[in-house]
Amino acid sequence: MNVYKAIKRDLAGMILMFVLAAALVNCFTPYDSCDGEGHRCGLRIRTDALTGCQYLESSQGSLMPRLDRQGRPMCGVAQ
Image (tube, rainbow, N blue to C red; front, side, top):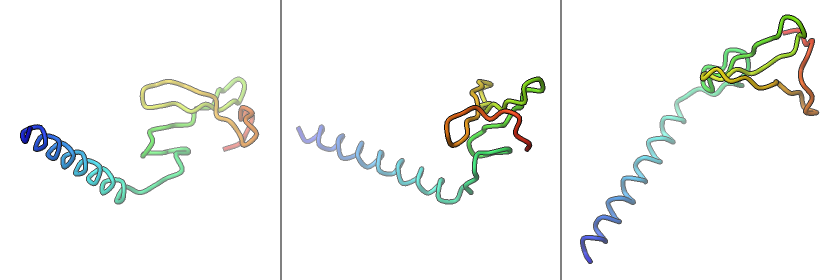
């Protein structure tokens, strides 16, 4: 039974160290708005040349419409 307690203690310690390391990395990473050239989140703004509607492109290539505060697609907005 002592072996299981030791494993649980070691596992809890490793998880704690991982969480602390992740927090430390985020502490020194500059935040940005994830708009335009958002290096931290990897999103880019793409504008449809025909409609003028804007889309957010992820680093994997997927697109989703860029929405304003009222939840409407942003179309014909000057950058």
